[in-house]
Image 1 (cartoon, helix red, strand yellow):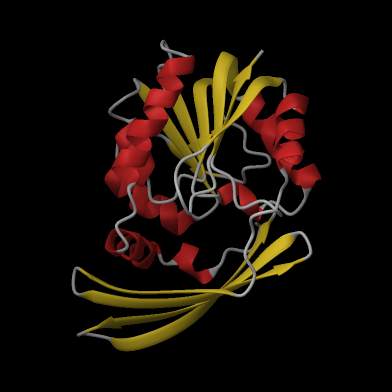
Image 2 (image 1 turned 180 degrees about the vertical axis):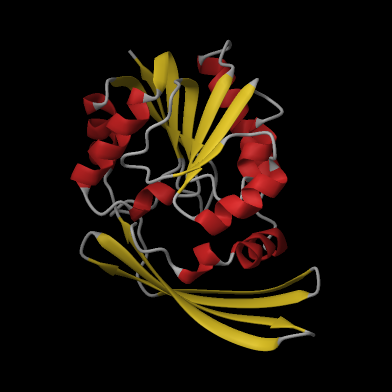
Length: 242
């Protein structure tokens, strides 16, 4: 995704929304660490691609000796740096970032991979991940929905209040070919500034399981598993570098 949606330029609003929605960052991170340890007990370094404001990365920092993050949004990284002042955090695109080290684990969570536009971009991103991975290392991806379970015409709404900021979000998602088009409207209210409104548009690709497995294989990653992570969650792909 080269053009950032407005929410990714308003990191405090993003953080407050998911805090208010009680996103289970800690429990999700603990489960991922267990899955990683089951497959690579000695893993000591982790790179989180599309790390956002660093919520998951903050928990990973307590489980691995060295963690780093990459994100396309400078504003999200600004908040992540406050949360993780000692972790190297880099601005970059998941398709072609260049770091000077390799890692035992690379994660890409919260369905960020869905912003890639087609299978060619998915393959390119996985090859980029693999170039930064040690032999025996893991790539863990939380996908977006697949064509067979994508819902069209879905409406979701939330109102949360966090730290004196009330946020209302209403979204509508439709399937258009191989993509989900999600339109989200936000109202953000504070006592000092009153009420403001902005609109987000998200285009997310409905990759098939075969497309994910092909991208892993072309990147030299074998033994790809799709783990189920609960209702209303798309699961986790985990693969090991040969």
